[in-house]
Image 1: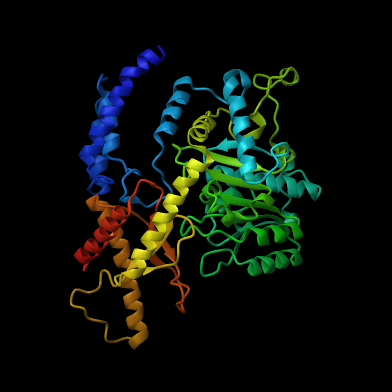
Image 2: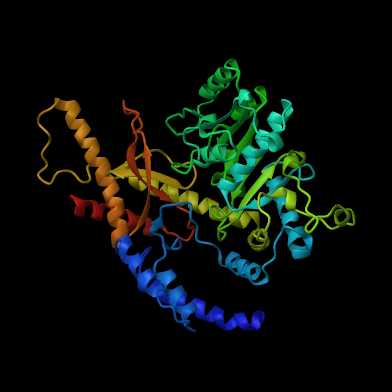
Length: 501
C-alpha cells in the first residue's frame, strides 16, 4: 500500500527465506512421503495468532517443500526454471496489479500486450494486421478457446448460432485429435456442450505422431455418417514424447472437409525460437489458431500462455459490451478494449514479463536456450541407448527423453513362473514386474528426494502387443544443466534400481 519503499525490505526477507529453504531441502525436492510434508505444512498453518515472521516462515516452508525446476535432477514435467529477469518483471506486475479488462485499468499494458501479440503472430507466420490473440493461463485455456471459436465459426457457417442458441445435436459435431493429444481436448468438448464422445481419437504411428491416413479415413467416415467435422487438433509437442504431428497433411485434410485447424504448440512452439528447430513446425502458419506456452520453452513464471488466431474476425462470438468496461463511445474516442479477446474478465498483465524477456535476450538468445536443451536431450538419449541396463523408447524430437530400466524389480531369487502357460505366461509376468519396477523406482526417487522423473505409459516399439508399458521420462528444460549432471542423474537411477532388486 505504501509502494516500493514498503516492498524493498520484504524482498530481502523473501530472498533470504528462499535460500534458507532450498538449503534445508538439499536436493530437487524434500525427502519423505507426501503425508510427512503435509503434516509439516498443516502444523505451520495451525497457529491462529498473527505473526510478523509469517512471510519468512512460510516462504522458507514453501522453498523447502518445492520441486525445484532449477535443480538438474528435477526433470519430470514441462515445468521450467524461470529466468531471473522474467521473475523480476513479474514482480513489477504484481506490485502495480493492472487488469486488462479495460483501458482505464491498464493503459500501457493494453498497448504492450497488443504489440507483443503482433510480434508473436509473425513468429508463427501470420499476417499481424489480420491476426489477433490473447494471453491465457496456459494450453488448457487456449485449447478451450480454439475449440469454442471453431464450433462457433464452422457451425455458424452451417446456418446456426451455437454461441447464442446452443449446438443442434442433429448436426453431430465432431473434433479430431490424435490419441496422444492433450486431455484438455476432451475436457474442452465437455465444457462446450459437445460431449467428450464428440472427440474422435485418431491412431498414431510408432513415433506417437498422428497418422494422416487414419485421419483421412476418420474424416471420410464422419462425413458419410452425416456428421459435421468441426475441428482438427494437431499437436506440436506431445506431453509424453514431444512428438510433432504432420502439420501440412493436417492442414490439407482440415481444408478439404471445411474444418478448423488448431495446432496445440504449447510445448513445441518453443522450437520457433530456434533457427535449427523451427522447420519442425513447417505448416503451422496454415492453422486457424495456435496455442503457445512461454512457461515451458520460454522460461517464464506461470502463467504465460498465448492463444493466436489467423483471422481476427473469428473472435466475433466472444464480443461483449459492458458499459462500465468498454462503452462504444469510449472506443470511438480512441480508448481500446481487450475484453472481447478473452474468456476472462479480470486478467493479469502476463504479457509484460514476456516482452521484457524478448527485449533482454531477443529471439536469438532464447533460441540458444532451446538449442541447448535439445542438445542435452540428445546427449541423454545417447547415454541411455549405450547402456545395457536401459531401454530407449525413441530418439528425442524436442527435449523429452523416454526410457525405462530393464528387469528392475525382478524376483530376488531370479526365479521365473514355471507353470500356467509356459513362455507366454513368463513373458506376461516379466512385463508386469518390469512395469511395477519402473513405477516403484520413480516413487523411490521421489521419497528419497534424489530425483523427480516423469512417467509415461506407451506401447513398446516393435512389440506385438499394443498394450501400454510404464516408461520413465526426462523433460529437459534447464539450459544450465550439464552433461555431467545428466550422468549423475542416470547413475542415481541405476543405483536406485539396484536397491529395488
